[in-house]
View 1 (cartoon, rainbow, N blue to C red):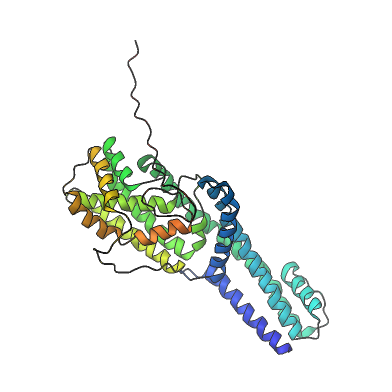
View 2 (cartoon, rainbow, N blue to C red):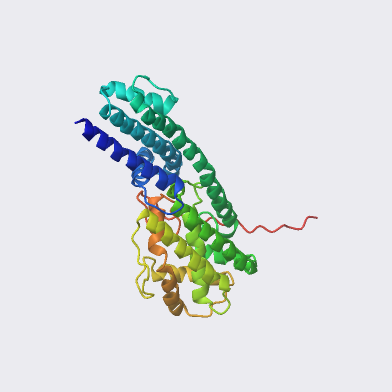
Length: 363
């Protein structure tokens, strides 16, 4: 019976060490069952707490606590699992009772001390347990600057996009505003910035999936909605005006859906790696037609008919729509236009546009 406790303790210790390494150390998008199950459970509880209010703002306020709670939950689960594992090992390798084994394991794990010094043949295990607790805490502390560094880089570009694409961001609005205020020459630079950001997001959010749960400071902003808006703007421009569209539009589209696929592989979101250009998408032709009319009304000169442009736009959007919609749903992002359904009841929110006020001559 004691050897069964030892075997169970060893297996549990291996599982915990594997989870710690997968989450905090290995620089690769590895799936951690603990992180995703903990995130799923806490998201459900937070969503349930906001459900009686029935508003998106209530959901956003509740979900803002998700990432900090997951961080605390991860540390608690790892240390608690280590306590159980070392208790099993100490109890199985000695004549200690269960309560004495738990007390000694907790003393070694959390206080760097020892409950007894009579069992010299177990001192090595005591020292290993004593080193484990501080090591996990140190790795967790070192994990935070990486998370917040990636978060700050992401949110800087999301905030800058607000003046260009509105809040919440929307691809057609991004194009329309550039022609309304005659800043369309700034689009290539915008696409270059978001190409780099998309690569950054793909690397950081697939290696550290907890970043997916970090929300923007304002409820009307979301990194996935903003990325989707930039990709839609580039796809619309390439579809309706391919000759005048900058080459950066193609580059940002490629970087965008590549990064989304990297995240999808880590989070196990199913997707077609090589979709047919004629495959159906959830966005309708009527929605696309209305958006193109709005963009052209701002002064954008189209080079193709709407019917012909729709075929090309669909060929671009099929590469990223399903993943973007699932990430928007999974993260309870602001229900922006063209961003898919949510798990809570909400109508799509159009972007706000400031009034065009001109100064009057004073006498």
